[in-house]
Figure 1 (cartoon, helix red, strand yellow):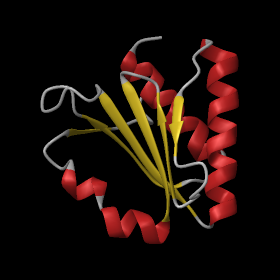
Figure 2 (cartoon, helix red, strand yellow; figure 1 turned 45 degrees about the vertical axis):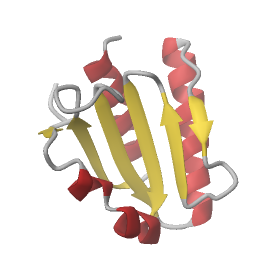
Figure 3 (cartoon, rainbow, N blue to C red; figure 1 turned 60 degrees about the horizontal axis):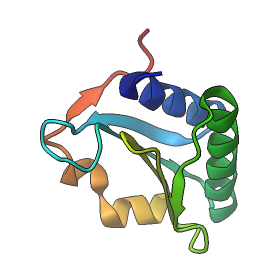
Amino acid sequence: MNSLELAKRAAALLDEKKAMRINVIQIEEISTLADFFVIAHGTSNVHVRSLTDELEEKLKEETGLSPRIEGHRSNSWILLDYGSVVVHIFTGEAREFYDLDRLWADGKKIDWQEN
């Protein structure tokens, strides 16, 4: 599975668990951090944790990949680092505060729902 496929699959899995405002941003031409960011938020701290757990479990089953995870204790912003794809899962308030969508607006927004 290449980086784009991984980013789209992560977005689809988040959508299945009712994540809000899912964005996939291609950043490989403007940053060396990753090829893609997936940004989404949940409706509560519990929802954020549930999204994180589900994503980690399903992607491990499907790809064998285990992410580095940051922010498990805060539950307001959890980051799953798959190397070429970094997934950011926020609470709504934390997403507004950090505003990564605006910060990375120079990246290319990807339609993750198209095949």
